[in-house]
Length: 194
Figure 1: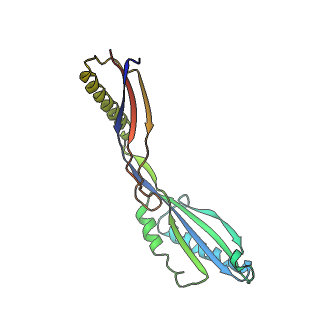
Figure 2: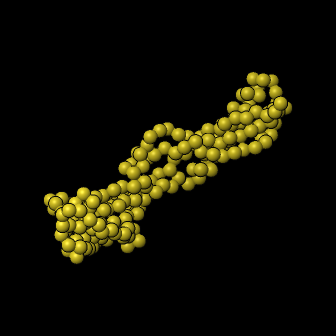
Figure 3: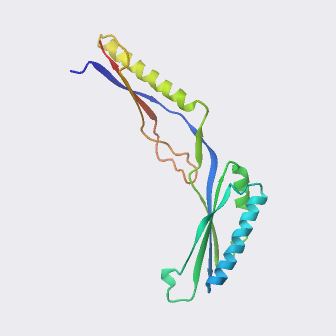
């Protein structure tokens, strides 16, 4: 029979979004590939210029690639689509949001689509957040072990083993980082009963 008490120490800590991550997908439909490529280049350059003029740096605004294709549902018709992606990773959240709200030049243009997609933000914990959480989890586990030891009239000895793992992570609730449940981080501690 094992001569130890196994307990779970629970805690949680929070991470806060420090950078927004956005994709701007630009699509242009045209009769000829040359026309589509020329038009999308002008639109993408204009959007990038707006972002840079607003105060974002070239490191924060990057091209995310392009593709050219004929939609399968329009194969019997003349026409081609070209797409370009602009990616933004920035700490300047207000500049990003305000600038993207002003990109409305193409709302009435049927051949041009500008879609803005917000992805999961980049998070960082507060300073010493993880360290404090681990300490709290160990204290929580030790308190539980003491209660069990007292209830069974045994003396609690030294800790034999500690394992750290996470039961899950809550989303922030931001677009691209949906919050579907309440999960805490957990540390596992095992203490001997003497």
